[in-house]
Image (cartoon, rainbow, N blue to C red):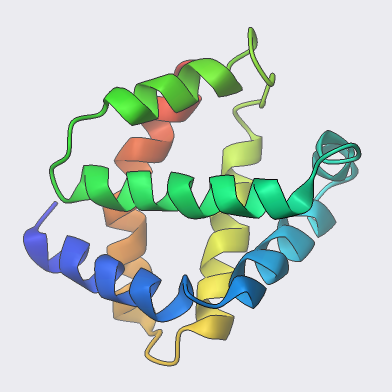
Length: 132
């Protein structure tokens, strides 16, 4: 993955992450994608969850920019069958919700930006998912 992709993604996320509504809209989409996913968040403090999401996306972005994968490996463990039991097929729903929310909130979103996001964060998502 080139530095151009990670720069595009870093800037795109920067345009979105200072707006709390971005994270609210993401969870509306993600929870709307499946009854099973919605059930995961029944007893969740969503304000805290949005804070965790903000950090998690930043970890994916920073990994794409060359940071070590230790934080993503820890996320993989916490989300594995021995942790939150986040099933592998849910990661596609998560990515779709993220891209749809970026499309809504990033005024410079384009096919190029979407492709850069996919190339940049898929390796990190796969690292987390493969810990299942």
